[in-house]
Length: 424
Picture (cartoon, one colour):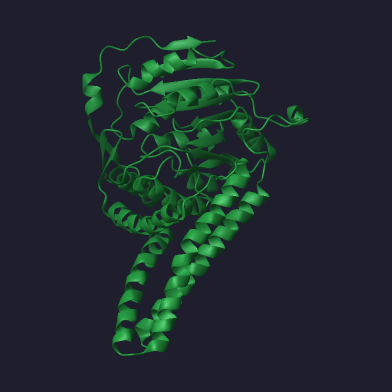
C-alpha cells in the first residue's frame, strides 16, 4: 500500500466511526432529556410542576410563511397559565401584517396580545435581532421568561409550558431549546437534500450545544446578566451566540427532544444552498466549534475523492488487495450515511411521539449523498462570505459584531404606519 492508500482507508474509518459516535451521543441525550412528547394532553400532576410565570412569546415576522396562520393560532392558545404574545411585523405593508390580524381574529385568545410594526431601521444588526429587541421591551420587569418562536413552527398547546418547566427544573439552565426536523412533502431533490443535510446538522447542534432560535426560551434576568441586549444590537443572528454568553455566567443550554419541530415545507435546490450557507455563516461568526464543524464537513468529500483516485491507481497497477481495502472502506462510509439517517429519524420520531411515514429508498439515498456535496460547497461559501442576503435584505458582514444593513428594498415602499394593536 502507498501512503495515500493508507491515509484514505484510515480517514474513511475515522470519519465513519466519528459519525456513529455523534449519532449515538445524540440518541443518548434524547434518552436522558426525554419528556412527555410535545403535543400530548396534560397528565395528572402536571399542574403542580414548577413553571416560570409570567412569560412572553416573541414572534418576529417578515414575509408570509406557508403555515404562518397555524403558527399564530397555536401560539395564542397555549396552556401556560400566564403569558403574553408579542408579534413584531417588519412593516405594515408586509403581507404578514394583515395575515396576522386575520389569523388571530379567528381564535379565542388565552393570552395578552400585542401586534406592532418594527420601529426604525437598524444599521448595525439584522432586522431579526432588531425586531427581537423591540419585542423584549420591559421584559426584565414584567416577565420571568421569554420564548422565541419562528413562523415555520406550529407549536402544540404544551409548547410554552414545556419550555417554562425545563427552565424551572434546573437553576443552571439558562436557555431551553428544541430543534427542527424536515419531512419532505414531495419527491423534489431540494426537499430531500435539505432533509439529509439537516439530519447531520441536528446531531451536531445537539452534541455541540448550539440552540435553535425557532423554539427557544431563556430566563429574563439573562438579558442583563449575560449582556444579551448589547450582543443582539450588533449581531447577525439571535441564537448561535448564546452558548458563549451563557458560559461566562455559569449557565447552560438544555435541549428538549420533545420540542423538535417537524417541518413539511417544499424547497428548491438553489434556495437551499443559500440557506445552508447562511446557517453555516452564523456558526463561523459566533460559535467556538466552527473550526471542528468546518474540518469535519470538508474532510468527507475530500477523502472520498482521494479514495477514488487511490482506487484507480491500485487498479492500474494490479494491486487487487489494496483495491479491495479501499473499496471496502468507501462502501462502509457510503452505507453508513442512509443507515445513520434512519437511526436519527427513529430517535426524532420517538422523541416527538410521531409515527414514521414510508420513506422511498431512492429518495433517501439521493438526500444523504447530495447533502454531502451541498454541505461542502456551502462550507466553502460560508468561509468566504463578506455579505449575506436574508429575506430580501442585504447585509455587509465585516465581523461578528460589525454587521451593516446595506439594502432593504421592501422598506423603500412602506406607507405610513397604522397604530399597534393591543389586547389585554
